[in-house]
Length: 378
Image 1 (tube, helix red, strand yellow):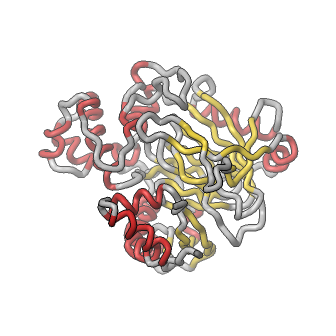
Image 2 (cartoon, rainbow, N blue to C red):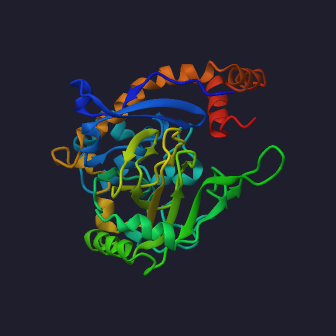
C-alpha cells in the first residue's frame, strides 16, 4: 500500500525560525516512508561542519569512544565534559577504558566497534598508519562545500564517457560487515535503483581537474581506496541507506537531489561536495524529479592530521565553518520524528506486520526496527 505522507518539515537553519519562504519543496521516500521537506535560501548557503548520529545509541557509543580519544590527546576530565556536553561523571566512567572494553548500546552494529582500516569482508587490506587505526576514526563530522566545482562539462563528459551498468543490490552482516546479495520474494536477485560505473583518469578532463584540486587541498591522492560513479537518470532512481568502511568525499553533478545523512536531508546541487565518515547515507526516491544526476564518491582513509580534526564541530565551536544552520537541520528532523513515526505505523499492512512480530515475543521497538531495516519486505 502507498506510504502515509508525514507533515511537511523544514530542512532549514536560522531562516526557519525567521519564517523564510521556501524556495524548494520536495517529496521523498526512504524506508517506505514519504516525507515532504521545504528548503529555503539559507539551506543553499550553508557551508561547514555538523555532527551526525544514526541514533541515540550511536550518539551514546560515539561519546564513550570520544572520551577515550580526547583523554589520549591530553585533555582534562572537565574539558572533555564541556566538549561532549556531558557530565564529568559520564567522562569518568569511560575515559580510562580501552576502546575494546566499551559495550555497544542497542542498535550499534558489531563491525562498527572494530578498528577503521583493518581487513574486513568489504575492505581487503586497506593501508592506513597505526596512528589512524582506531574505533574513533569511524566517525567524523559532515563537511559541506557548496559549489566546490563549477564546470558544466563534468556531467556531460561523465554521462557520455562511462560504461553504465545496473548492479546487484546488497546488504550487510551487522556483526562482521560482510556484504551479501539481496533477493526478492521469488528468490531472484534484486538490482540497485541506480546505475554505476568505474572512473579512470582521462575519462573526463573536467573531472580530472576537479580531483586534482581536491587532492591538492586535502592531501589525499595517495590515500584513496577507489573512485566510483553513480547515475540517477531521474527521481525514481535511488540508492538505499548504507555505510562504507572508510571516509567518503561525494561530488554531485547535474540536477539537485536529496542526500540523507543519518536521516538528515541535504539537498545537493550541481558542483557540491560533501565529506563524511561512516555515517549512514542514501539517495531517496523523489517523484517530482525528471532530470539526471551523477555522483562521484571518492573513498579514502584519513591520516593522523585529518583524524585530529574529525570532530571540528565539537572541538572548535567558534570556528565559522561549524554551521549552526546544519545543526538546526538535525534538530528539526528529530522534532518531526514522532509525527513521521505515527504516520508510518498507521498503515494497516505495516501495523499488521508489527502486531505479528509482537505476538511472537519481540518487543515493539525491536520489531519496528527490524521491519524498517527490511524495508517492510515481509
